[in-house]
Length: 328
Ligand SMILES: [Fe+2]
Image (cartoon, rainbow, N blue to C red; front, side, top):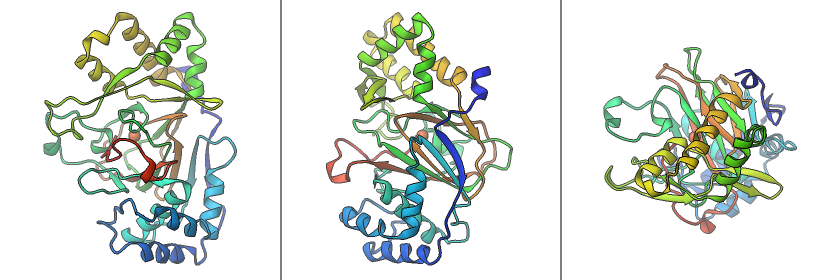
């Protein structure tokens, strides 16, 4: 666990370095011009998202924020004291939607309602019995993963906004840099072989049943764990989804493959350096969803409340496959 005490050097925490001035009101007014209603304050994919994006990118404070997030080489960036704590839910979520649209194209996160902004907080246990539930719907910890690993086009980025941090000394946000996972794999012959295998072999990712019509219906997406992203390396990772996918496609589950997955999971969960911080209320966390893995430490405070927005680099009209993904 020694290495796990180090924090990846491309993940930063910094305080907001500009004054919003009148720009919060201007941002809300701009969003208001495009939306007749806020869809229960969750928003939705807007048919004129490209035009709205162009207008929002003209707001000076949103430009400053985008520049902070786009800081050279950053793979994760927590901005404390964002300045939205005093806003009502509708205005706060309008600003979060606007921040996301300045960075790319926020995707719909819930098939039923089309919501873009997703509330991460514990749901009552009775709603979740006998289901392969998603991490955002329960207290406890969340294993390291990338979002939307089981769909054809995982979003390239996501935002989390801390409305109410856990008051139980738990619930730290965790991030691991994919380069550090790769470096750890390169340290042994078994690791190098696992990396080669998991780069070349499409694996079955099982879609969690909360998104499927019924628990009996098994949906699978085939994809390799590692892929090239220009000069760098990206991952799809959701250990439980792969294990359940292999259970549903046992012919693919060779002992060599199982061993490679176990080795990789151990590196990700135990050995790779990790960012681990309990982020305070009113913090915005941005992360690269392919070059980092994320998770959270154990918590018990059911009042913990975050908002998540996933962001695609491509406009929604150009996306392939489902993007109605409720949560993970
Ligand atoms: Fe996630």
